[in-house]
Image 1: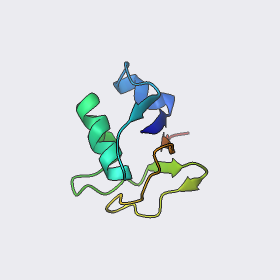
Image 2 (image 1 turned 90 degrees about the horizontal axis):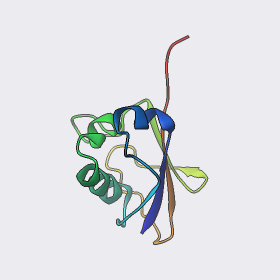
Image 3 (image 1 turned 60 degrees about the horizontal axis):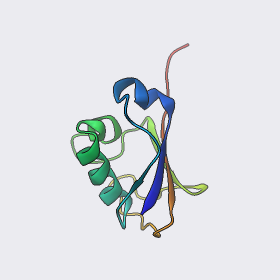
Image 4 (image 1 turned 180 degrees about the vertical axis):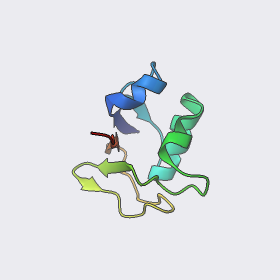
Length: 90
């Protein structure tokens, strides 16, 4: 299972969101599992076409994912996934 970490900003909308272990062989499968665990989370991460939103970055280990459209990047069973949501403003 992938170990998933989030920025604190998402906890403002999902207070019970915490680091967790999530099943999935791809980033898309992990996102689907996260949305089942936290209904509505996917709408903060992907747009209506399923593409990663511009202000969201996902890293697997130290590397950004390559496929922002289909989220098909493969994950190893011990993958560490980091979901970062950029903040805007001044």
